[in-house]
Length: 242
Image (cartoon, rainbow, N blue to C red; front, side, top):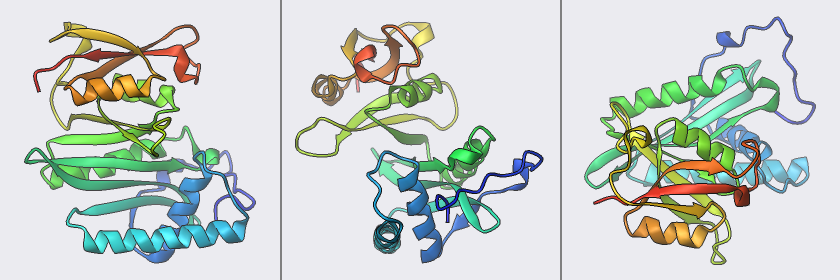
């Protein structure tokens, strides 16, 4: 189990020997949820309560996969039986097109920077292509501007904003891009429509423009590009005809 006396791999270990495999058992899903909770901003409980929580989430995940009419795959990478990285893909239908939704990517902190995230992204992209998807979708926390900028620089556009609660103070940005070919909105070729700049922390205003058909195409910082405070970032949104 990752986290209870974290395993630090020897420097000589070749991380490329670890290959993603599809997770299918309830035990694997439990380990997946444990790792995801630990590597993201959750308020962690005691180890026993964490395992019970993860086990309940694993049961719910398996039940949803069986009941919902959208194929779901979870891939993981293990080291000596321990889950060190994992990621999920759902095949969804949107506007009569198939979208591969990448989510819940997690890598143990001792294994980051070794290419495991790319391996998991590549194998999930293969699934999306095999399923005939035209687009890849993903999401990032609204509190994480660095992750948002990374996705925008990778050809994604901000297409939606989903709030966590009624107070609408936090949520996740949903991003999308064509699975193959040029970006639909290329900031280097100039805007197709009007442009607006909004504070990245002004979620209500961003949501309002998204509902009117605007998309987020770029972000700029007001000082330090490594600043994680959304108030120090501006989101550039473009008007579309969609």
